[in-house]
Length: 172
Image (tube, rainbow, N blue to C red; front, side, top):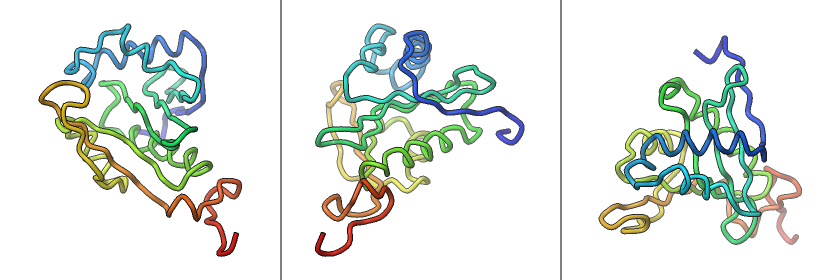
């Protein structure tokens, strides 16, 4: 499917893009299950330390990712969503690959949370190389568990973000 489509991923701060993404988010699981309406989903895009990327097919938004790129938990994929009608065609993997490349410019560690019941996303993240590092019981809603996952390219103290993918040399 991807071979003949015009797919692009770009950073956005445009309100109209964010509103489209918030509607997409509010209309799909896990956000439906958590009772997050449009207004609550819109709040997920707020904050100074977030980067928002949209995946477009022929200039129509088909997915998005929200990354946290500064602070203690830099390298966190806060949200990743592909529209329901575009799932199952490799777009989630394409967006994850993009996120990994961006995060590796600042950190060797990539983090993501996934709802335990979101088996499709959990399968995708495991196939992409994420490992389970913790369970957050009752984190968003009573009785539901979020799984904290990490994909690493090395320890943070041995990483030189100025060189991107290159670990620091000994003694530096």
